[in-house]
Image (cartoon, rainbow, N blue to C red; front, side, top):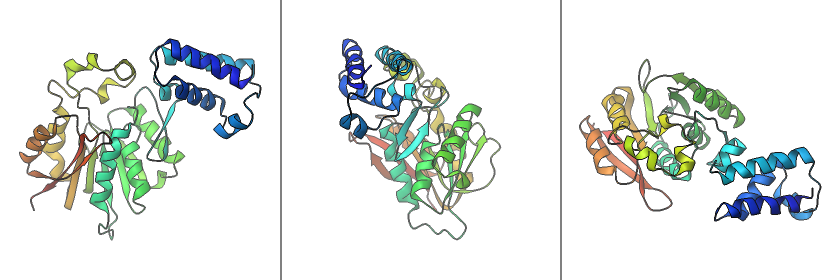
Length: 284
C-alpha cells in the first residue's frame, strides 16, 4: 500500500470514532509506527509500505479509536525535550507538569553546589520530573523513589536513553520509608484525584494510567499529608519542597504543609492558567 493511501485509511477510522484532531493523530500514529520522518513523507507521499507494517498501523488505529491514548500505543512520550518510555505501571507525563519542573529549576538556580545539589523525586514513575530537572541543572544528582519496581526499571531506562544515568539513581520505597540522606529539593507529582472521582475521569486516563498514580484517597490529599509529615527531616538547610496539585487544592495543601512547619513560597500555573505547583520552605 502507498503511504498516503494508508494515512487516508487511518484518518477515516479516527474520524468515524469522533476524534476531533483525527488528521494530526493519524499522521503521528502512522509516521511514528513506521519510523518515517515527516520530511520523508512530504517529499515522497507515495512511498510503499509493506503489508505487515500496514496491518500494525491499522491495528493501532483501531485501538486509538477505542480510546487507547496515542502515546500508550507508541510506547513513549516527549516531555521537556526528553524521550521517555512508558509502561502500564507509569503515569503518562503531561504538559501540566512542566509547571512543577519550572518551579524546581527556579528554586535551585544559583544554589551553592560545593556539596552537589541533591534532588529527591517521590513517586518518580517514568522519571520525568527528576530527569527534566537534571537536564536543566548539570551539577545536580537525583534519587527517584517509587513503590513500583517496574516503574523504577522504566525510570532507569529513561535516564540511560537521555544520557543522565550517571546522575540518577532509584530506590523502591513507600514515600520516605528506608531513605537516608538530606536533599536540597524534594519534588513530587503525587496522586491527587479523589477516590470516588476516578471513574468519572476521561477513559484515556481512567483505563490506561495506573490507579496507584491517580488515587489520592477519599479527599485527594492523602499523599500531601504523607509528604508533609516527614519532608522537613530530609531537607538540607535552605532546602525546599515542590509539589504538583489538582485544580482547587492550593488552600488545602498549603494548610497541610503549614501544620508541619513548611510555609508556601513561590507558585507556578500551567499553560491554561491553573495553579499547578507550589513551593514550600521551612520558616528558618
